[in-house]
Image (cartoon, rainbow, N blue to C red):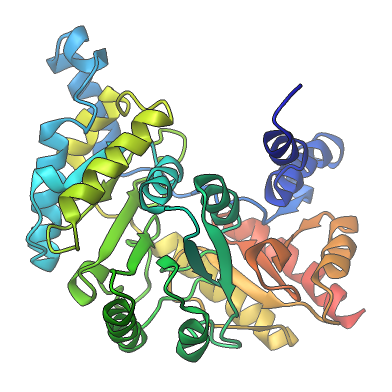
Length: 391
């Protein structure tokens, strides 16, 4: 006998991963250069050279046990101090090393935070479009997962819809800005209005409503402000990853930040630590903790992504495709011609153009493309996009 929920999750693979695997199979047949794979958000710009230099320095400067041995479960003090210093310099955040819990990337961070906050009968709100893994993470933690309808066509936040869905059982709302899959950055104005709404409803219900801010794309913005949410709404818990900002998705390193200003902050922090322990967390990779301790202030060079973004956005809108203008991350979320994203994606697949339907993101009728790819591939794929919309 096995756990049926676990079996269902394992047997029904992610559509994104299935497309990626299909692309690998097609590449072996027709050549990688003839497959236009926009499926997976795998950073294509190299890590800053300082990262590789720091890896070598850590390995040569430090004895083996210090590099490869256990760290504290909450994370190496030097890394936590470096993160606090960085946030304080950038945002005047008032952060301290003891506010951070270091984990192996944003996914386990979200799992730990959800499990820390979930109480019997509680609800978690997600604003569509949202990253599909939020749903299994939340439901496995014990939340009732509720989806706030998308604010089309701009993909900001429908505040009236949020208010209509809030109940005394609402424990938290998860936000992701810059957003996967839309590339939209939530404005300071809409976040300030949301904060006022949650503050008012929290007082009405007699308990805080937390924002869980999923921030792997915080550094990927093109000339717009990405507001630092804890300064707008103190009851914010941040889950951050260096996967996208330093192009390190396979290394799995990031942090949970529980600001002291958040309600019951020390209790929440302890609950996050306990949830992580129950999930098998021992400590994050020690080598990468030491690398980040020296590299926390590095920022990505977004020039290549920006060229890709402009090339696709301008090219596709000129053909008649409709989408919100992406100001962050490396995604476009496009209205499917004909209205059926699955059918459109299947037609594209026949031409070796791999697009992810939006159903799993809570937005049927749209599809996602990841433009963290080569500019050459983008230019070669544009005639295929044109042929598809003309059909």
